Length: 315
Ligand SMILES: NC(=O)c1ccc[n+]([C@@H]2O[C@H](COP(=O)([O-])OP(=O)(O)OC[C@H]3O[C@@H](n4cnc5c(N)ncnc54)[C@H](OP(=O)(O)O)[C@@H]3O)[C@@H](O)[C@H]2O)c1
Image (cartoon, rainbow, N blue to C red; front, side, top):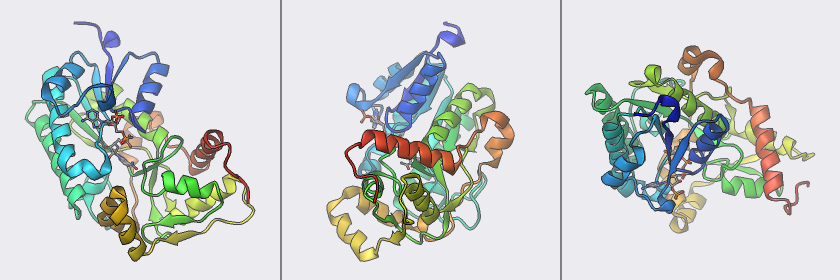
């Protein structure tokens, strides 16, 4: 068998986070193998998944089907990934979200009750339980890493700070929120999510068998982050944030499958939604870096300006 340093980190998915994880590992001089559907592999195929992960130093799982196909594709995909972890014996670091917790009554910690209140939350909770159960039985070594809604450079698939927001904000248009924009809501910076996954993979002796909340900046309200974008773009007037009326959302849901899927997730913006990352911070010290909202918004705006140079950036 090759030495640890020669065995590749196998990154599943090359989307918003998988691509960033691969890029950061490569920059550190680590060997990386990236697996994605469009380059000819389907991880729900057990034989393909097994071959893809054979010889891995660690598997970092950032693969996910399109949002409107979760109910049919998410479980088969994760069954394939778990099979890959069992057969390769490599530690599996799974990127998960917060849907399984349901409606929080306090800041979310790793010991918050799993109490999903949506179909997608039930699905994610069931998959996480299957992964942890495989670990408990000694069939695989699994760590689950959870993050809140993403924002950051290259992030377009995100509920609040995704493609629609980016297209509006460069024109100086208001932000939009699925609930009350004045409530605190944690947003995870994509770079921190990638760094956190890498730490859990490098420290797998310590991380497996547990759930981890990835490093996140101090929580503010959605409207306050929208204002930060306006300031970073140099707008003289503060950007406002409107609540998207239910009726408008329901009409949009008729035409946009992802919006239809978001309807059941609106509760996240109808109560304080705060992610507590103190376990990660106290366990990994200096490696538990969370990018400040100042720096994260500045980097996102720099990317936005560079990637959409034709857009009118002042109003
Ligand atoms: N978006 C958010 O705000 C957010 C917040 C917290 C957690 N998360 C979670 O973070 C994880 C990563 O999300 P992301 O935004 O980075 O995903 P993404 O950009 O949608 O990328 C998904 C990747 O998975 C690959 N894929 C899908 N089905 C596959 C299959 N059957 N076999 C092989 N590869 C497959 C895709 O391949 P192709 O590129 O070839 O299509 C793509 O590279 C997901 O579990 C997501 O739910 C997301």
